[in-house]
Every structure is written in structure tokens, then in C-alpha cells.
Length: 136
Image (cartoon, rainbow, N blue to C red; front, side):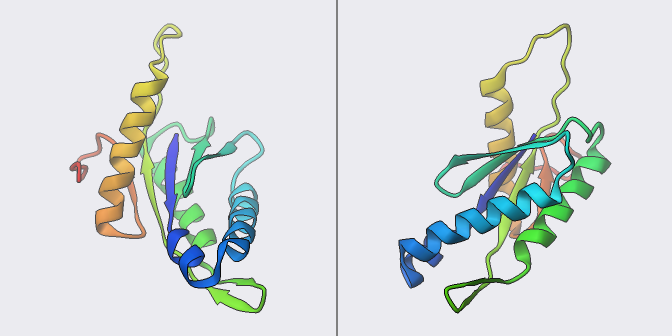
């Protein structure tokens, strides 16, 4: 699972909510295009998305997918004649299902912790529990 934070507040403040809403639609389209058919993306909050990926079975493949998502998001957007560049921070939490026991709230909290650690480094992917992981 990946928790993405995208910097929409500055867009809303500078261009207004109409452009910010259009940007959300464009970001969702790019996220969907960057994912595989077996993956799912959900808008989780104001500026956060959650990606569930069944095809990323190890940290390396999770980071590769995260970097692909970053690349898609960091390419310029053109909305109502405005060139918009945004950044994103991605926190990854691998899900290991032992006998069907999943604590969804803890998984989301861990992904959120990793995402906040990624925000400190800016425009990066951090995997919860990885050797280089340190909470923000």
C-alpha cells in the first residue's frame, strides 16, 4: 500500500478551487495510467491518495512503482492555460497477510508515518520499516 501526499494547497491558494479541482481529476487520471490493471487508487483525503498494489511483492518493486508514480505526478500539468508543477511524497507499507489477520488502521497509520518521513526529504518514496526509514 502506498500513501501519496500531493501539494494541492498552494494550487488552490494561487489559482482557485476550480483549477485545484481540475488538478485533482488530472492527478487521478495520471495515477490510474501509471498503475497496473490489478492495482487500485483511491482519494483518501484532501491531498492524499492511497494505492493498493497486489503486484508489488517486495520493497524493490514497491519503490520502483512509487518512482513511476512520482515521475507521472512531477510532469507539468496544463490547466486553464496555467502551467502547474507539483511535488509528491510517497509512504509505502507492505502488507503481509498472515492467516487473514490484517489491522487496516495500523497499516494506514504506518503508510502515513512513512509518507511524512518522505515529506521531510521531499519528492521521494519511503518504505515503512526499510533500513533507511526513520519517522519524521
